[in-house]
Length: 256
Ligand SMILES: Nc1nc2c(c(=O)[nH]1)N[C@H]1C(S)=C(S)[C@@H](COP(=O)(O)O)O[C@H]1N2
Ligand SMILES: [Mo]
Image (cartoon, rainbow, N blue to C red):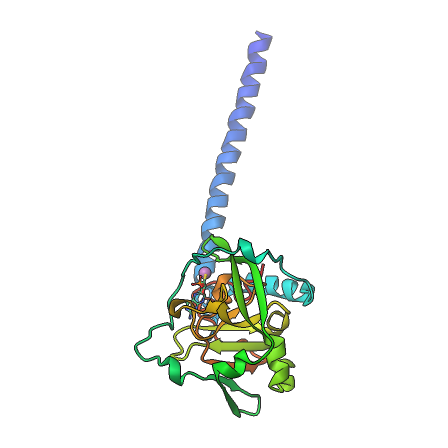
């Protein structure tokens, strides 16, 4: 009899507990729905970055601050022997690579200086500068990676050669394809990192058309999205330049 009483009490307690759990569950569902509704009513982040709600962009911006404050310009990305570079290099992304309006013979790299003067630089001018090679594990945010070999001039050597000291004091570099279909914005410390090159060779041969002929960026501290193929114009700014994938909701910094 006594035992039955105890059992009865226990089952009452149990019932009450499950009732509380049930209520708590609905409160949590309500809160989650509320936050989701709140998030979806937040303004999209403005202007050039676009694509996601401001609170989410704030998280990416906080990450970026953390990364830039701890970024060591002299820390090198791992390099591999050239013999380990794949011969069949994957092709990904063709925005800005339409050859209909592109004449390789007329191509010149345009450098917009901070006083708005523009330098027009030929591929031969760029080839005449000291050549650097980098063989590293190229990573795309879509989830693939491969060891690839690239040749070109260090961005920092190029900038010194063309007297871009004032420009190097700004916070960002912007680059766009000749037709302005693809464009990236990159923080200055990453651009000046010694493995970042203005690249005109892959596996010792001129770049194939679909991999950015005549000149692309290779920037091993970043994911593939920032390795813009077929650079037309380079400019410098203290504000974040427009960035193709950041406008589509991706992280602006995309370092690894
Ligand atoms: N002009 C241009 N550059 C671009 C892209 C693009 O669509 N257009 N895609 C980027 C992405 S997402 C990746 S992963 C790399 C791929 O370079 P690959 O084709 O040489 O492998 O190029 C980057 N540069
Ligand atoms: Mo990519």
